[in-house]
Length: 484
Image (cartoon, rainbow, N blue to C red; front, side, top):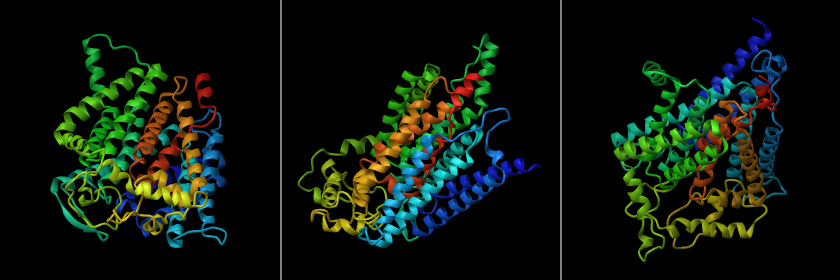
């Protein structure tokens, strides 16, 4: 075995270990505990160090995915995104210095550790994913991690289990939570897995095939589809949709279907080759997953929750129970007797805006929201709030406007890359990857308006990996494809 082939095998092993780590990440309460976060960050940087040593020892092993192809060059945008993530981490680290400010030094250190883990994961994906096959393996890993969570959530939900895990009380039966601390946290994670699965599905569609002629040929084509990888992925997507409906998450379900319409419509306008496959996939998700299976597992209860959400608070709104959503780690377990009104839901957001008004440029320190917020909380908010239930406001309150602006640039650059790659001149696997990443970003952006999916480590890491995948498409990929 030559040095180059040995290095390729070693890189594949490192990628496999990374996928296994992604599957493990949501199991210990979404890795929203310091020990779980530190363990995963250490593993990511160990894999990154090993990948760097392999790259130095055998640089030709990862220069191209196949013999005869031009060397794969990382896009300048990937370097730009990585630089922005490093800048955000450095900005949060500055808050711990004598020239910075933080309300809670311990929480800010953990916040910086989280950022270091995300930077390492993004960089590791750029080093290891050097071929189309590895790109599909990583998308499949995200899909598999989501399916495992979906199966766990469905089993626990069906059993109506009551148990304690790592000091947190779980009460199953009303809304599925999986191994997360709340149903909305599970919903946000499933959205990322669904986006990866849709991208994986579309990578295998849109290729030109000869039209089937005759009954026997059509029957053979249908049988091949039933036994193909596309059918397996489609079944896994159905499991994810069932688990998403069982969370009863209002914004989680709304974000999925709204992003499905937006991305599906854009693809139909932008890509004639994917127009028919995308239309079929969107229609099947709506008809089979929503109308048929969704009604069977209780989609009507999600609709009832949406209808019960009032626009204005009533006189007895103060007696409403806290939302059973997201990462309410410090709040006791309650039964929800009344849905929050829109005004009640946005109360912590309005109070948190006062924090942003006081320290707009430096913030109160990464992760210090829980420590600083009680000074600004209105007396009518009787329950403790760990988070603002709005990622944009919380990130700005923690890191200031500069921190929010750095992350916004990361998102804008990635969306630009997605739009660039949804083009019929690109291969089908590139278009499918871009569509999956685009849908994942839109779902996260919509869900972040009323929840805290970016504050859950497993969800934020999965989104970071999904973001990184689209930047692994090397420069000149379309030109090489056209030459071929």
